[in-house]
Image 1 (cartoon, rainbow, N blue to C red):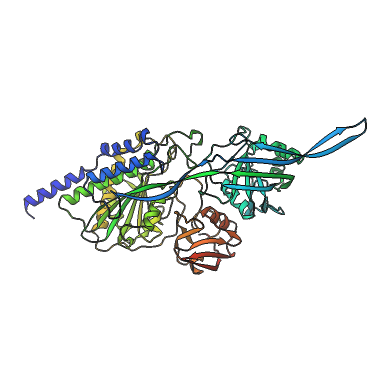
Image 2: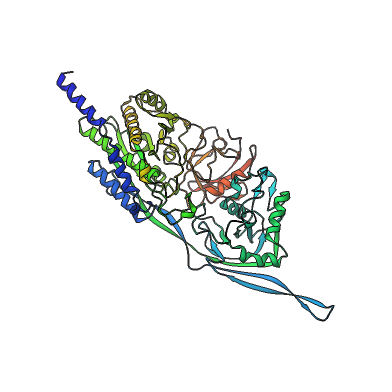
Length: 625
């Protein structure tokens, strides 16, 4: 090596060391998390502004659009939102007894039918996951709407609700009793509104009506929850509405009942108090309008010497003005800026793209290419990454590793979570060889590559992944997740680590071989939601990994784990589950509920669609590990 060449290389290395700049990194976050971006909700005009901003950064760095995109954009359609339609009507017909006195010792009781037309948005309102349509049916009270075999509790025991409406309370029994067989003050999944809807649907009900149990929530006002707050699928396949206590009181009175007395009795002995409202019939016309919009993933490619490549990605969407995923429900309608979640990761992708574009243009060619991607629709269920994984613009077989950045802006005490290191044979050794040169303390607590962020879409297709995450905090999914709380210098340390591990993977002679690792509890998840057929939570193990971009009906398997009950029964990735035991499966929430209603050792007959054919197999469930 000549002295001149050594000086040139020294200059180049120094230039790269200065490439990552905290001020510039924060400037991207300021743009993406600005009030004008209104929280970058998927389907919003502001998300498209963010997409154009990211594409502009890629273009400025002279990165190439990926063939098949439209100026760096990969369009796809999603159901983005729901709103209350104009045709919502609820009529209740119920018997009323009238006593008339005729003389000193003569009382005559007569019964007549009363009709009440309840007012939408005042007396009742559909939930955002309700089906639309007209239905008429008798009304049945089904307590808390819970069937919990593990607690020997069933509100539907000896209750016929087929083709009827069920009225249920919104929480669960004995919730104020810390010694309850339920969870005491920490609600179980049985209290989730959609669990109650899935249970009602499984019992054949036409609709479910939710009633707030004010007896145990005396501080709550008797008012309807804002539309859009309920977590659940895009469409439940059953009419779902809520009703005020004031509107429901005459119905209980006509049956000779009081709601508070019923709640007190259930809490006292944990025995259901379900009953049919005598002669009470509901006539419902429910309309929920759903918007289908075109949104975009944003992609740019830096070629290498081979056709292999590394993916560096992050989602750029957030919650907009707050939806059912907000952890500050009282602030619905307020901008949720999403500075850490995930403007921080998006800014990281922009900066890494700039770094590697500069590296390549300086005469240091890459062995493998790098695909830079930012995804839409992550907050709605990994939709953008799921779409790309099923519609790849570069062969996934050539993807060496997918590196995902999600919430990397608030490193505390130097601690950084790195997930997925077990999914590739060389990933952990590569990281371990690099870490001593960096000031970060890495936590490898989850090696599986599964979780509630976009790397999961690639793990399911056997691409090794690394997931970089700085941890949850009190501003997660709240309007207080603002740019000024981002730690720029620490974020730059994360980017330097990612850049070096990317270079190491890129230059390695041997690409990492994919390894299946059992999923563990997801540290990135901040709210309750459906589970896959394996992993954390309670209930038996099935062994499937769901494709979060669900088909119109059923649950498509993105993967089926080797040696699992599903695999032993012959099920494969790509199969669409349509029935599980005696329950029809329309979506992932249905599958979650059906699976949890069984126990390890149960043999369950399931039906799947494999291409155009229906296949029925028996699956023996096992214990979760």
